[in-house]
Image 1 (spheres, rainbow, N blue to C red):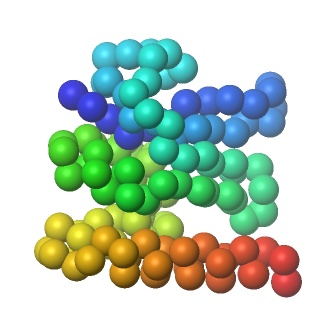
Image 2: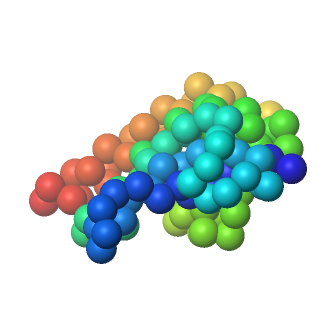
Image 3: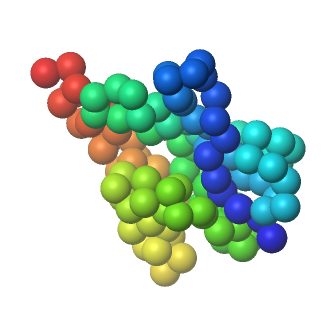
Length: 111
């Protein structure tokens, strides 16, 4: 089974993660199929950058997010956009909406 999960990087006491697509049987920091994003929980607010088009493609083909990644997807709205994508909404409009939401989050951070 293919899972979308976090792969830990960074120094001790300074965690950062890559969002990867990997086989469920491979170790946490072991082999993976593709890097689809990054997550940094140490910033305030956290930084979460992903390639939504690749995530949608993997999820459409049966990849399941882990619990922690699923929570991040819910917070950032990716799961809602994926449900709309499955119902037939255009990928371009969803990606444009995601880009605008990311810009708004970045503007809040700077302000």
